Image (tube, rainbow, N blue to C red; front, side, top):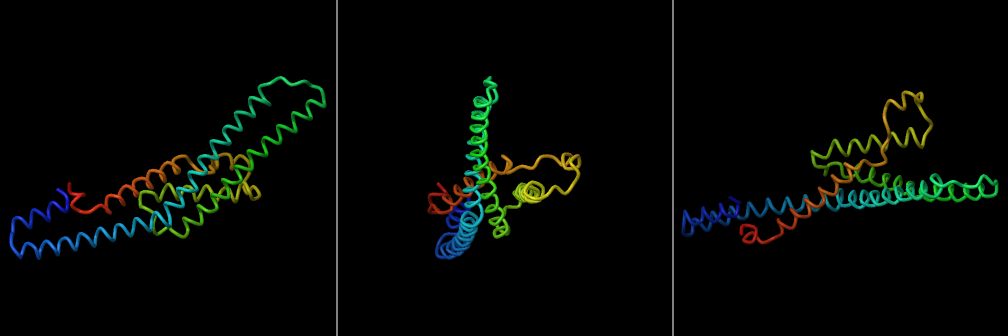
Length: 201
């Protein structure tokens, strides 16, 4: 039974002016609760989950683009048998290097996006849902490792570094989780903004 159905049931049971007074009080309380939830969802979407969605979706598309570059690179430069002529080899190497550099530029955009994701998390951490803490904290560790171990000098011996595992630019699980949360919060917001008599129907 929904909150609104409870209100209607109580009003019909008690009847008269008393029921109206109680009904108004209950409805006011429910309305205030709904408004607080709306405000919290709005803050989450505007300050945290909305910006995260923007950057994670862009990263997802950039990863797809880099994958297409890798496939094209393999097809054009690895799978083919090229002449051993020095001039041909030089031309092929130049084209291959240009393709790699182009793909790397898109990866650098991912890194720039991740900088913004870190800023967003640091400013809006108080708005993170409890069940998202582990996933978002994992991203923060990955990003910190990237800044330290990839962009900075290698701190540990190579074998120790390898034992720690790969550093992810952004894990697919995080991209999917942010997407799901944004869609769920938008749906809940639409539900809360509907007139109560429609929500109860």
